[in-house]
Image (cartoon, rainbow, N blue to C red):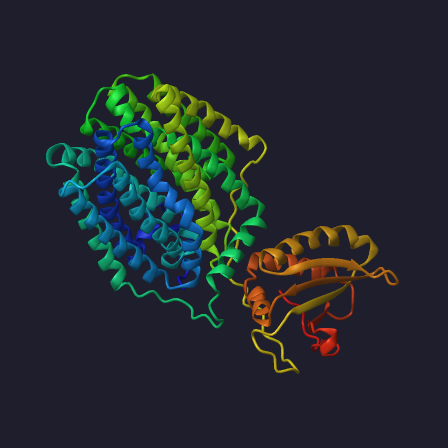
Length: 547
């Protein structure tokens, strides 16, 4: 566990670099991202030379985002269930192998449009496996207070390479061909693989059996479904990805057909996008301090709409590149803020899965947008498609009128660690169940409105953390008595449910205890259900109130 450091360090945008492992992984990722961008330029430009339609060119962008949409949830469950360092290592080795095969196929002249798309899909399947573990591991490398700065630095690192990588990729493709670009990408994985192999994180040992992937995925989806603020981020992220993806998907066509350039022109334009993104990463932490979440995101939507419209009407590479500077900054400001909001709203036990759902929404929007805008460009031209995307981007910003993003807040989502397994009179196994829980409160009539409002929040938290069939009932003969009732499938799931409680959740429990007017604490009954043919229901001993 990483201890928090003095407040003076928290305000620094470079504070995460004080942690050696973050610094090492960040540096190695810089090289890996550099190679990935060179490979991306090679793939996109190669497709313009072998494709028979604009649709296939746009599919290169779709093939890079579709795997994240398809596999992110599984990857998120893996990130929360297995050793994240090992998952990251396996993903990097897989991508290295696929990149070597891509290089060989290209060198031997075996590449077709669909073969190229298949290789792009496989490489980005590795990225889909890697990303949730990497993003969730940031919280293992730096204190929670430094997460916004760490996320901004990750964006900065990627976009530093984006500012020069595409231009160098264009030079490599123009001088030595796409095979050389693919070979450079294969070499770029080596450093990160070495760093991950040598990292030995100190992680708390789990006292409970690992969840199955199916159960872990279900828990992640349930957490997202019962977290309204995260749901708002998903909608806005999908809307941003759908409309903003048009620029990156159609940029090869803009470089070739609109401004009449070559591979180097395409690389320079991507570089301009990257330079703008570096600027966005540098100012994003400051923007979070002076602007509300909704204002930041609306500005990003509007700025990217300007970028798309400028690309549609400009026939000069320099003018298009100026617009891409704005687009790159808005891209990072929006996506980094979405990422930070998700991470700061999610406890460690489920952060990989929630991040994966966010990635599914955002990159699913990009993949869908790349396909649709490619179809539009095929029928009406890239200029028309980019103009339509700009209008769609403005409409996406207006969604905030109905679904405004939550205000920035720092919640203590560390585990509460207050629950202790009660002593049981029965020899219960972890798989025993179903378990029924009943908690009895005594509430004064004047406190009923506040109690009901607090219980609504308690019910959401219960269901979010795995409780089933949660209900609240009032005694007809003694209206002061209220019974909270819920189930868990097994005793193991009951323990897991209670261990998921955070310090932020404890505020609700403390409010309920303050409203309880009985002489004793609220009465808890833990029961195991049994079929009537096997005997009567067995009542477990009473115990203290849970979290």
